[in-house]
Image (tube, rainbow, N blue to C red):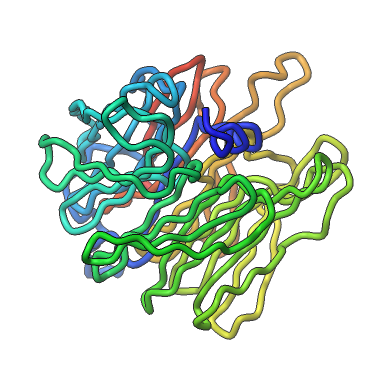
Length: 385
């Protein structure tokens, strides 16, 4: 294991991942009554589906919506040298699985769909013949072999997004910082170091103008943590710490960044009392002002997870771990919240006992998809909004 991977694993478990590209909004159709109708057929109801297993996932998992409805999922069975499988869950919930020929771990926010192709950020040792460290993997035609190339031998678990011009953007952890890399049309990579503090996990989003937005949790000492947001919208990188430093180390962990019509959304954990975290939402409006609100007073994102997604109307959908009962501390409830009514309303998801590390996305038909981790495997659940 490289130094970067060891540090990233110590700061953030990689049992969850995901991606939402703000500029690739799901299509929808408006009915005469002005409500949103499915863009494609789906049998999902407003009740959560029974959880189905997608297989072993000790090396992490990632999810991205498909514009034709349903979602794509990458699952790594065993970690740095484990085989990676590609699964597509279609609009009626059918599961289609294909091998990828890829080996490695999958971090959060590590999968993107753009212009008919899937793009993934893979970390680990790779194979004897292939690159190591952080790699880009691309499947341009469904079912065909994935193209793979090295990005940064020192790169840890990465987040990926593709802009309107097809330029690949990655944000990822370094041994002593956070970096942003882009791939030019000629295949060359350029890199900027955003922050020189040890940071993980990292998420990324792009806005309509092509600016990059990154969120991450930083640590400068075992008990000094924080949440940060960085953007190059002004033409140079600007970094903002979201929460004051908490001496107990409870503030600022597990962040997610999303971009929508209202501005830049940041989700993160903040300290409430010893051992208890609140789920926080920060919105940076187009005028650069911030507003802050609490989604849930008692909760935790648990291990790093892609905690949020935006639907086609720009409303937030958030998933996180609640507080486990004292009689079963390893079984926190899985909580889901959305602000579609104008204010956040939260509910407990009927997930199987012992599930952790939830992640979420919303597909083109308005179906909310969850992945949760249970005893070395990943489970999928879904429902209509």
